[in-house]
Length: 191
Image 1: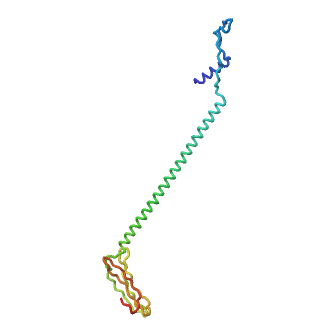
Image 2 (image 1 turned 90 degrees about the vertical axis):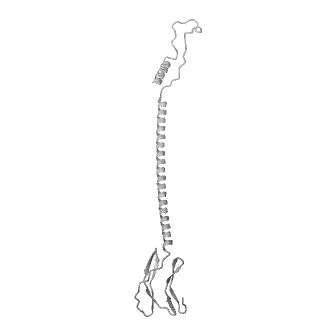
């Protein structure tokens, strides 16, 4: 409001010619007459079209800056969310790999512990054997798997010339039992 009043006062002084009113009495010597005061016209600051245009451009620039700031903020938030998703995905993959490694370690420990029999196998069940020409009956045996004794029944194998079938057996070595596999050996070889 003050600015408008000041602008109005300046405009009125310009319109009046820029000279203050003098006393009606005048002296014969104007150099000696001190009553006349000349006032120079003040620069006029009238809000014109250029000022309004500048204000409008400033507001437009401010709005554009605000839009750019909001766009940058949204892009930053999007990047943060993407990074968080990737971090969670990596954490899940690491957790999955850790669980898999733990399972494998437990399985290996169990295999190390369970695949070495510490006790003798149970007595073999009775198998019915019928003589078959040209075949040899290979007796069944126990196999140690996953901490348990599992029976494998016997079967027939075709005879081989000058060969004799030796059956496998479990032999104690220290505190554990070890399987000695059977197989065909030459007829002169005894063990």
